[in-house]
Image (cartoon, rainbow, N blue to C red; front, side, top):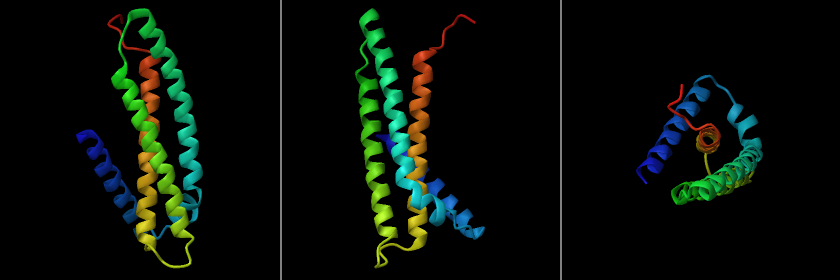
Amino acid sequence: MILWLRNLVAYLVCAIASTAIARWMQSTVAVDVLLPNLTTIVIALLAINVQTTAVIAVKLRELADKHGYNFRRSIAEFRLAIYEQGGLVVASLALSTIAKAKVEVLSSLSLECFSFFVIYASLHIFLDTTVGLLICLFPETDDH
C-alpha cells in the first residue's frame, strides 16, 4: 500500500512539474496533443501490457510446473496492474469528456495536470511490466 501511495504522489509531483514547465514555456502540447490522444495512448499501453503479461504468465506457468514455485504474489500484482490500467482508461475518458463539455467543469490547468498524471501512471505501469518481462525471461544468475 505504501508503494502504491508513493507512486501516486510521484505521478502527481511529475504532473504538477510538467504542467508548470509547459505553462512557463507557454506550450499547449497537453491541450492540443496529449489530451485528444490520451485515451488512445492509454488503451494502446494497456494492450501491450496484456500481451506482455500473457508472455510472463506462460513463463511463470512453466516454472511453477517444473519446480513447483508459487507465484500468487506475482499474479496479484499483475491483476492489480490491469485494474489500475482500467481505471486509467476510465480517467482518460472522463478527462476527454470534461475537456469537450460545453460547461467548464475543470480549468484548463487542472485538465493539463490530470492528463500528465494519467500518462505518467500509464507509462510507469508499462515500464514496470516490461521490466517484469525482462526479469522473467532473463533471470539474473551468479554465473558471470
